Image 1 (cartoon, helix red, strand yellow):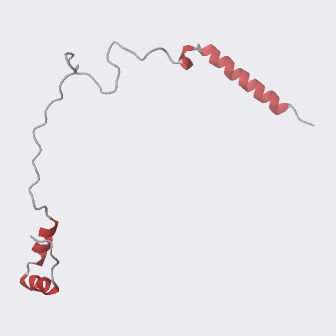
Image 2 (image 1 turned 90 degrees about the vertical axis):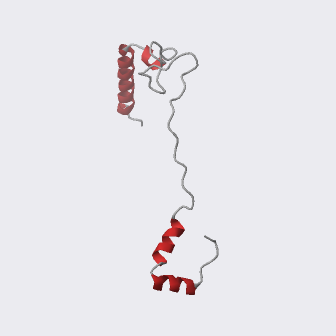
Image 3 (image 1 turned 120 degrees about the vertical axis):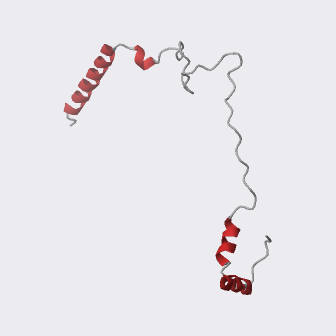
Length: 100
């Protein structure tokens, strides 16, 4: 197949012979056969340590945890309750004080 433009007379001849549809389809079909994908292989394990069967990518390995607790969760619930109550009380007193 060439990349030369097709003349109008050629298109008219293809249409009368009934080959125009086949010719147009041959233009959009790939000219080479696509390479068939090879057999998928399993990823190698991490060096000498085999990958556990229950491993989830991105998760902490079993028996480990992130370093240190987050500061928000290290406070007892009573501290949060007291802070919310203090905030509510100061917000109400500021709203009640009329400014002259």
